[in-house]
Length: 109
Image (cartoon, rainbow, N blue to C red; front, side, top):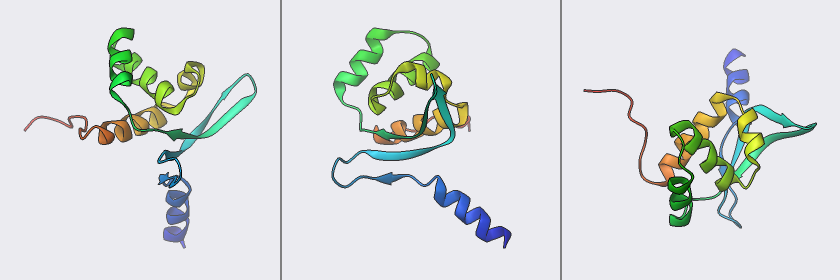
């Protein structure tokens, strides 16, 4: 019975791709609320060269660049990204890294 609940919880946060738009639907584990509007999922598009250039131009540290990229690719205001749980930000960052054929380093060898 415990396994069934765990599977249901995992399914609730499963990522899917909309076949019409090609955008990746990502449910948030911890919905973000700004001014009484709650965001429980985002639609993430693949990054383009213009997105990478905009991130370079915007500057800031790695975390700021990640949050800016999420805002751009999900077409949501930065205020929502600032209110997202770190778990959701990291998950979105990993998906974006996968779009670019890279993944964050997990440690030295």
